[in-house]
Image (cartoon, rainbow, N blue to C red; front, side, top):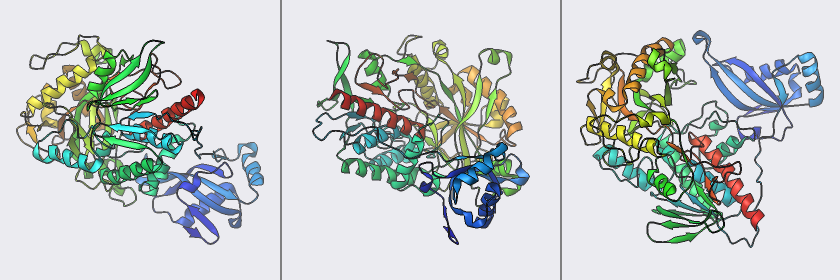
Length: 579
């Protein structure tokens, strides 16, 4: 965009080398013009209009704390004539506390492979972590081999629709397994709370834009892509990796990790279910949070891991119009705001729940989206949320979950639940815990992959629902109206019952009687952490690099991708140093 002789940039040109001035907390009304933004920059810097050479928006957020006066809040970079004079004048006597030098956000490779380097690293998994680990290794010249147990993304999409439309599950090709990982069938959220001093998330977003994502993800505060766009982007990134000498193999389930214990524990090879052995001394383990058979395999091979906390609960659905009105007030429906989201938490006050430090929070909120079937195992029901880029479906949904810890895994199962495979206190007891409640949800849903559902009013009253109210559930293949409290531990049901009225006071209408609870949400994060050292290597197995969400080091698309970059850098430096 251009204003006179001033260039206005809204995206990657903000990836500068520190030669601009950064302005923060610049607030303007929703319907402001480009002229108004330019004028605000000039006023903030106290310069004349000809001194502003160009500017670019680095971040644009919505400030909705006062619903009657919703504003955009900008962080932007400006190039000005005689920058040093402007800088000194504004910083003198702390005149402008919202001004700084623009940071260098460009990415630089830590090393490159030597031309005659023969060793090829192996990456297990093609979710966000595995893809970015593979992409970075390919860009540095290491020609990685990426192994994916599932199918290419479009074939995987067909299998996923098979469950949603025909109640037919493919255990190796579904929401959890296949090219693109679990995040492919989600809202495509691209924001995170990780500390990112090296601006690696900027590298991730830039690569996504190259692969076909809208450029707005580079500057909006809460960017998202949506499932359909993610599918095309995954295909583009695959082509980039293979063009750089990488190799992606589908339908390649890892059946064993060969570890040589002669001189300490060192990875030597990866074995595939089809019988192939791939020699490898550097293996990135980016398997995702649902690779339960892989967790068991690693445990059998002596790879050190720990049980870790996760959460359990339901999906809650409201009319999107209700959420818009509660969040935006008179501005609900404004084209620049789109579908409203929310982030809520309640710390339980009931004596018993407080003693257990129970909290209830919203998870993976999907504005204008749908609740989806996300199981990867026969005879179990799991829910998740998904949105398209448009976010224009009639309902909003989010996980409403309760945090649990490894000490909860030792609590006895309910009588109707399947027996647990591992003893209480076992490192994989969390997997048993998840399976227990997923099996209970399968039974409560009717044993055909329908999900158990209940109206919030009935849930609060402690009675089973018999039919839907004003809110139609979006879960496919379908729901069975029942009492969903049978699908979670008693303390989780009690915590959510306490939380709903409290959250309604924070977001008006949240506890509406006809809102729908659909069960069960268990895959909020991995039940294990495959512990690694500061060099990103397993603490007891050299050459094995646990990475991403499945290893317990990420939570979402962006953080998993960033972790993939950091692990790829560690692998590359290790290979070069050993050469």
